[in-house]
Amino acid sequence: MTSAVQLKGMNDGLERRHSTGPTSTSTTLSPYTATNSTTAHRQSTSAIDLSHSPSNDESPSDYETQPQDSPSFAPTHTFWITPHSLFTRSIPVYDLTSGISTPYTGLSPAYKAAVQKALKDHCPTPCYTLTRQNWLGLRYTITDVASVPVAEWKHPWSSVGEALLTFPADSTHSTHAVALRNKRWGRRTETFVMDSVTYEWASDSLLVSQYMTLYKVLGSQRAEVGKFAAKRWGGWSTGGTFVVDTNEVDELVAVLSLAVVLKKKRQRAAKRHGA
Image (cartoon, rainbow, N blue to C red):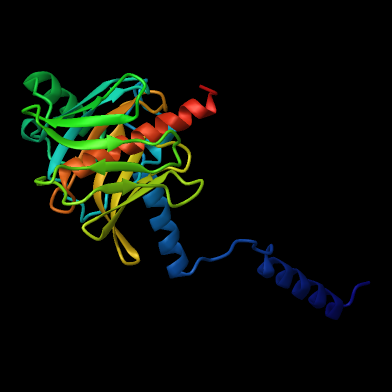
């Protein structure tokens, strides 16, 4: 027979086993870790507008990863760069600023739709026209709304070469020539200096360049002064919406620097396809 002492020992063992329970493998997050995890999740989901259905001209993956504008970026002008190909001879540029009533909160589908509406409703005259001097040449003459020459653009044969913008002696846009070059090998960037200030064009995505930003370099800091959204995401036909803060950079220099970037994009596309 089992003694009373043995029964008591068995009961104590059962009580300890039930009170201990299974070993937990979960880890309790500290308040700092939990807060940062939640913030990171909100930031990653806020960049995706689920109500937007990209058109055939947009890359869904690039749209979903489009970064938000800096809170300090306040564009003063909106331009439309007419889509063009590698062999286009004349590129009209339209200033649609006065025809857009939609507040700028970024290059959203709504703002780009307002750009298209202004382009259709107002039928503006090009504020600038970039004309190739001959069909296969790399020299362009830029004229204003009155067909007066305001700049010359000499483009390199290769996308890694230097492009040169020159202006008349009495120009109100620049007192010196502006050279654009890629200073970072293998990176889709273009840098130029105007009035001793460095500016840099950079793609917003590592994969495609549908969205690009013009930065004003201030020491180790960069400030956004222009944003571009391409009409189409391929490299053969380039053009689209360009918003710029003309308080920070001259509008013509900004437009022409973008034209250089787009032409080099087409040159890279042609090289990839062996054209």
